[in-house]
Length: 450
Image 1 (cartoon, rainbow, N blue to C red):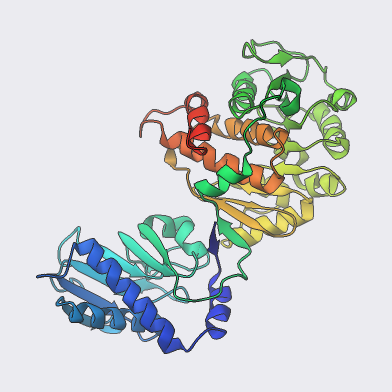
Image 2 (image 1 turned 60 degrees about the vertical axis):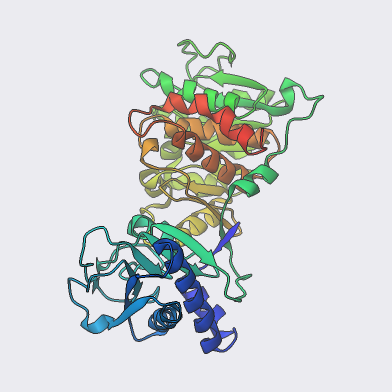
């Protein structure tokens, strides 16, 4: 896992570290190495460094010294006086302002469109905490950041402005980090292979989902569970509607009282409740009663989040088994009374603590927090997931991993990672939610090198 620290946390780490000139020397050397790699060498190369007055600018100046020593023609320009266009060059090093910038910045343009920009720590003009653009920020093709990722590299405008991000160790102790970016190697350790003597009931999932006009959501959630390794999937649609569940799914009628499911819950490793469930008034009381007292891990998704609404934290607070909530921004507002703040990490942590649940906030960078405030991030998703039904697949997949015994925080993060990777297997255009079901098995298998 790659640590993620806020600008405030990073300032504290810096203050407790070695002398600042030692750190700047290491940072500048790392930037110079990356610059040479981008340009393919030093011979005949020209670099412009836009340097500010703080440590970020000093990192750039040390990089300039290192590059000159290798024979690169380097021109250092004071960020305060830089104007467009910059002098002609093969590479621009953006060392104007770091994560602590608190005002708008209008970045000077390179002389030639397409000239690559290498950002130092973060693209100047991007808020280091929230990732929002301030003014007209740098759009970097590459970023070298130090010791840990910063939230602004992953969120909002910062995601596209950062380009290819490299985290470089310069000797800082970031063990204080309570947020981490999940990587493939982490996911592989969290998802244990199915045992040779396993049987279908060792990873059974009960999906309570669907309503007239929303039949696809239930099918997709069931598909996510089956493709995620559930050995048995049961589907119950309130009111007993039978709309042709997948062949492998067992459909059981609960009527309109969802509490009946608790009477036969002991054989199931997890429940998935909510995809396409509808928002009928008569479901609310039985839904609240079911999820509050269900002695099994439960994933609450889609319409169930909206139906429970702002009462969800109160209803869920006393649960003794794991709960995973999977809101997008509007559903987050239904649960908490307001959309996520610019500091999305803090918002997710706060809701997770109040609801005594793992909260997975969907987005290009999906943020997952447990009630204790430990955060995992997955950034494998992209615009291909912005289509109806993909969230239903994700809910089913989380349910399958919970049923397989994966810890709740890890199950949610692993599912988000695998879900995003499955989308990346699809063509850039035209992907639909059911395409994910085709790719999930290959992605899960690839994590073990199969």
